[in-house]
Length: 298
Image (cartoon, rainbow, N blue to C red; front, side, top):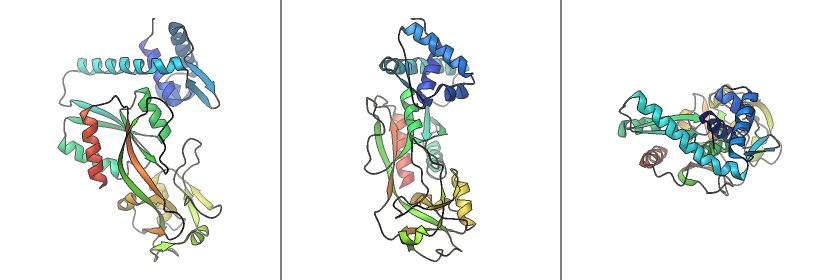
C-alpha cells in the first residue's frame, strides 16, 4: 500500500469533523482537494473508507480499522518533528478538549495548578461540542476531553471499544437572574414563575442540547436572546435583559449584579463533568491531570 502522510491526515480530519467541507476548512484545503486525497487513499487501500449519510460522512468498517493505525503514524511523525527541533524541558504534552464554558473557571484553575506541580507536563486545549470532542479522541487528534453527561448518563458514543470515562465532579443547575430584577431578592423561584421570564439560551444544535431555558419548564419558554458565549449570556443577565440556566460551579465567574436561584419545584437537574480518553491510553500525565481537575473542582 502506498498511503501518503497527507492522505492519512485527511482521513483523520474527515473522521473527526464528519464532513469534507469541515475537514477542508480545518486543513486549509479546498473541498475538491479533500476529495482527491480520499480517493487516492481509497485506491491505495483497495476499499471504500467513507459512506455518505445525511449531513456528512461516516467511516466504513474498513475506515474504522485504518483510523487507529493512521493516528499512530501521524503521532510518530509529530514526535519526529519535535525531535528535530531539539530537546525541550517538557516531557509530556496532553492535547485536551473541553466543552463550551469549561474554560471559564475549571480548566484555567486546574491547568495553572498542574503547571505549578508538574512543570514537565504541557497541555494544549480547544473547545468543542461533546460529540465533536469524542470524535477527535477516536481520530487521535485529542488525547482526552472534558465533556458533560446528563442523567441517565449513557455511554458517550456507540463506537467500540468504549472510551475510559472518569467523573471529575457533579454540578447542580441553577438560574442566573439580575440582582436588580423582580427575582433578584429571592433565594428560589418556581417553574411557573420562571415561565414568565425572558430567557437567554444557547444556539440549538442537533448533535448536543446546550444550556438555556430550564429543562423542565411546564411550557414553551419566551426566548429573548440566543448566545453561546458565557460572557455574553451573563452580560445580558446583568443588564436585566433575561435569565438563563447555569451550572452551580460557575458562581465564581458571575459578573456583578447577577445572582443564582434554586428552582423550588420539579425534578432536580444536574450535570456530570467527566474526562474521557481512549482505554489503551495509560499515560501517567493523564492521571496527573485527572487528579488536578478533581482537586480543583472540589
